[in-house]
Image (cartoon, rainbow over all chains, first blue to last red; front, side):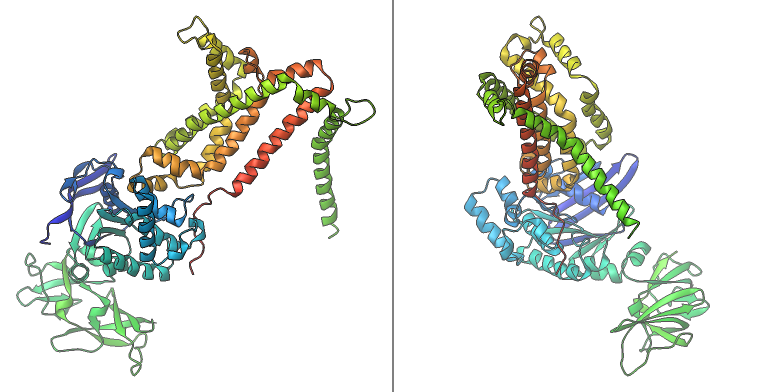
Length: 355
Length: 268
């Protein structure tokens, strides 16, 4: 990233008693960027978000927003907008009251509050619900109101703490598109915490993958998915089949899987002949039909899942199970269970991970 | 069906017995209070009680004391219960224990303690003036109503996610005063009101503290009247009973307008 960081998290660590939950995290977020923190439960992503929001104090490190050190400021002094997983709408206030709360606290005039509330209601496409109370709204509507409430006071950074987790799958998809559209329209710098990789990959400019308090990788969704920096990222983001292999000829990029030679792979420089490696294969990288330059191996079909547009085939290669996704072709019936078939792949699409 | 019938009969019998147990004495007392004039039912006893300047004086004194006690109790209990739930959850059992102490420590012990600590020769001679004694009495009433007020507010706080609501308000720039006044208090208002009405009933009927601090309260007046008259105490008891039931009715009424938890309706 070449732009000047708007939000800068430098050398942040956090411990609760003897447990260190965040270890030396460094992230820079550009103005208007949408960055997702992705990782399993307990990896420290929410703790970083809460430190940015001022709800936790870092044990070490600095947080700057637009060049200003906010590390030890109270949450109310940071000009942060936050959306919570549980919506956290104030039950005693109407939708308009909730949206206008931040402005009222800031001492805005009645007219200013009213026009901003109207603007926000139009933005979230709920202008008719201004006088409703939170309990009269659906989950999706409540979360939209929570988003409008967070952005109404024009915060410098918007923090979204798993805002879609409590919603139905269908609402989740439509709301994530809506959140992204609103974020783009307003150009607000946004941090989005999620454990759902689909959400992170589909919404973000960049994704930060965390594990056990450490940042494993920060990159665009394309980079994180296609060029995972670590075995954890490779296994956590997307579906992956891992094949045990041994480097047989580093110069030509050849490894052997169950004795079968596969050439043309990108082998990391630090590896030497005879080293044990793991080949990471995405289901969509494997094909039933070969192309020029493809490598291939033979495997036995164990399960065929017909998913409509996609057919997921599970294969057995020696002691390893592999998944293959193929688009449904109405002119070609899916393979049968126990059938032995040739599986093709582009060697450039294979990730070679050191053991 | 044949088995169900006797079971249902027993249920009805138990209910009727319970109702009779509670209502018959009330009917008897009310009927007696109406018998002041020989041979006919009349409201003479009520008129006499209501016209008595002592009644008006003691009743208004106790109502004011109740209102001050409620305000003091709310200011003391709401922030305390909120803070304990938010920041000191481990202390909850100890705080609950402390709030229960007024149930096991007799009022007479508390008031003697007050008199010893705050008499005219002490470092803080509150009993030296009427206002100081009233203040002391209000503290005493607040102590007596603490178990009910704290429990009511604590139960109210349990129904809302105070931690997340607090963080949401903080992220919108609110300070502690705004959070307590505009978010927490309105959301536990019904709980606060139920605690307030219990406090009101306690203050109206309290005798020991008011008598020993020599204040013109309603409790000592009722006792005095009961010791010297026949029909008026019954009329007074009916009036006090009516006030208590009125308070309960107001709690029920207010509960209808309380903010509801923000459980979402089903997504469409």
